[in-house]
Image 1 (tube, one colour):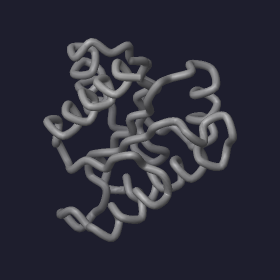
Image 2 (cartoon, one colour; image 1 turned 30 degrees about the horizontal axis):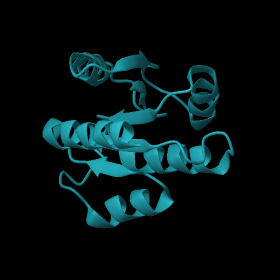
Image 3 (tube, one colour; image 1 turned 90 degrees about the horizontal axis):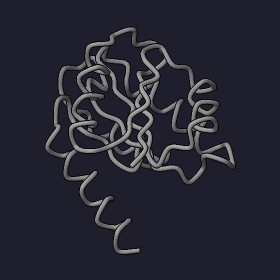
Image 4 (tube, helix red, strand yellow; image 1 turned 45 degrees about the vertical axis):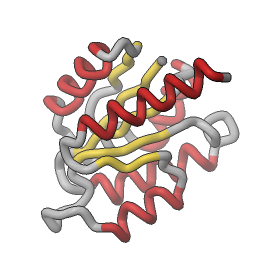
Length: 137
């Protein structure tokens, strides 16, 4: 599966993206890592350029909810990326714990999954299920 990995607009952290990129590659996926501070517009343009099967957004700075919401809304507003699967994970807020209202809003906006901070098992299971679905169709 071709995965476009990206940080969020206000997040300048890179170690999470390097780690996630390696993790995804070890699972057998082709990864294009856009790096940190990716605006929604750059994300859409990169999706057009790379034609990924999935977008993975990662946040460490605690503003993942706000930035992720803007990114997924922009992707869903664009006909070329409206149906593209998108997941997000990491530190989505500054409260220090998962805020279910934020998760619900991200899912309603179009995220296919929202993962807790460091929940690589859930991401692995999501990817395995997508791979099984792709093989079955």
